Length: 443
Image 1: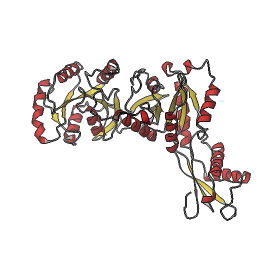
Image 2 (image 1 turned 90 degrees about the vertical axis):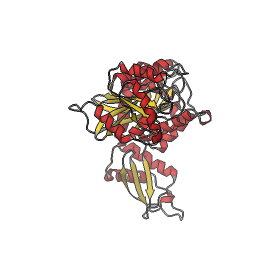
Image 3 (image 1 turned 45 degrees about the vertical axis):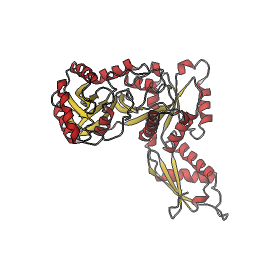
Image 4 (image 1 turned 30 degrees about the vertical axis):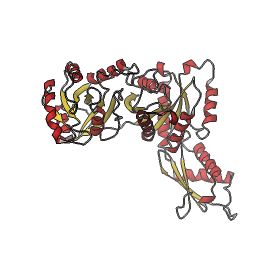
């Protein structure tokens, strides 16, 4: 069992900054706006050879303006219930405040080991102000500055000293899941509900409030004994509607999640038409050459009026450059067709890692050329395609050597791609094709 180190505190004490600092990645949104973090963010990391899960939580005692206070509170309680160690974070600049006392009382009831961390001591002259926090009753505080990178080493040492010894069978490295799935789409299409169906718990806050999810949230789950990672992303808005820093951060994290993913699930609301944001997401997925499943959610609300084949054709007409992408129809609130969608994603994952033999590639290339000759070069001479080879997987990447790379037109390249996709073991995933001459001239 991997121990969880849970970061708690009132709003704006720097919990997310501390989380990112320890994880050595910008995962959580850091913003002076109170209440930015709502869900539990969990990141598996290694500290001096010890594997643990670092957990960021929302600010205790914050009254969420969107009416999500109780859901945020449940996420905090769930984090505390599984904590092997609590990092209680306070702010040296503001000093000891009544909300800090409320937090102390709440975490004291858990009975967990607690490490008191006094943050925002950006310079040594602020260190003496940490002494007043000893009144909280958790021993001598550890003074740090996540912003100025002060005292990370002592903080890591203190965390490791307070964790229980590793149990037999605990992982010795921050093991990677078999497949990473990014859930992307507009606001309120049901991504978080789908993730909760995978996790079989309220792992991510869901509500009718648009923009409930702000961070990209990693959730580990298992299917048929295999470990996977679901990346729940914020719902995106049109560029002209992005009015706050939080919108900017959320957009950036959704795009980064697509790059991180092995397979992307692009969600649509069955009751809504496809919009500009959907098309922009599809463009990003295409640019990153990621396998994708089109997931039409809330199908129970729409199935009586429109048949699946009509919605499928609607998707095909809208995303003409992605005719290979499979379509799944789900009802996430009832976990209907969720398992089948994951099975489809696994199939795409396997296809994206397939490698065709050079002899098979060249058989397909020869047959394609015999059926449809490439256009002549600029001097009217026939273009010769010498051979093809696969140089990479995820995505499958094919290089063709030719006498005149600039004369191989885009339509002919698409023709070759379709031939490869039809005959080779990656029918439903993007393929990258490069055409090169003897001097490695790409075009």
